[in-house]
Image (cartoon, rainbow over all chains, first blue to last red; front, side, top):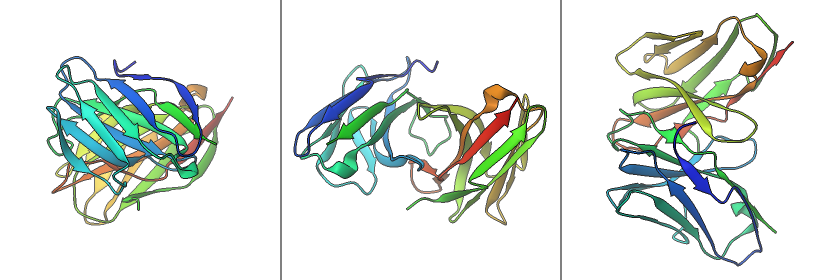
Length: 115
Length: 111
């Protein structure tokens, strides 16, 4: 167990709807990163938050947005859901965003299915 | 697009045997990490090797890094059924903070 929790565990949504996924980072960690993992593939970086500000973004459209709160927990919001958004969404927390110097600790993920 | 590629895609071995998987990447890195994933759940961090290191050990794990060939290998010795999982290498670039993952190697350890 890493101490990183995510909710909900599973979620089913309809195309066009909006979804919010939540992540609580490990105690003492101030950086949260979000990843999307499609079936049979490796995780793809969505974005990272450091001290409540976005600190880097991958190749995802603006309908993917996020927040980090003062207690360093985080939300991932996806608007106008598409079928291809069906995936496992992983959040990872770390002590610092410092270029991978610190290990990222992953939560168990949220499985999103879009029908 | 993914920075790393693992090889082989799948591996089936007998309990007690060693498992070796390789990772190749394209651009210069700061660090390389290996993760394990069981049944599509969260990733478990196994080991981090810095770009100025060549070999690292952790328990039954041995990782090597060859920056001139842009490749790394993960060796699991004396495998157990509990080692059955997907293994991913992840790199972070010199100028960015994100981790770039390969597609993974699926390891099955037969009892």
